[in-house]
Length: 70
Image 1 (tube, rainbow, N blue to C red):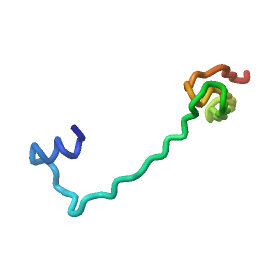
Image 2 (image 1 turned 180 degrees about the vertical axis):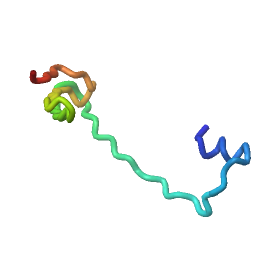
Image 3 (image 1 turned 60 degrees about the vertical axis):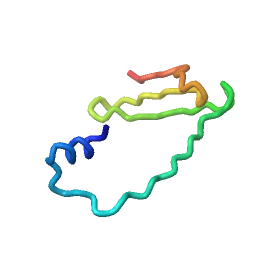
Image 4 (image 1 turned 90 degrees about the vertical axis):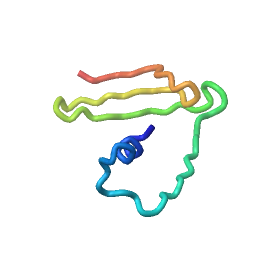
């Protein structure tokens, strides 16, 4: 049950939705087979000035390698 429905059920919603929202179509892009596509994710750790580098398989979402520079 969503938070919106719980609030409505208990009469705690002061701003009800007047018209229904459009349902969004999400496209899954997961590959069918392992090792078909690998992805690299780069993230900067702001406070430390370091990089976090992750390499993972798109099919299984398994992280094969990650590195944080010192």
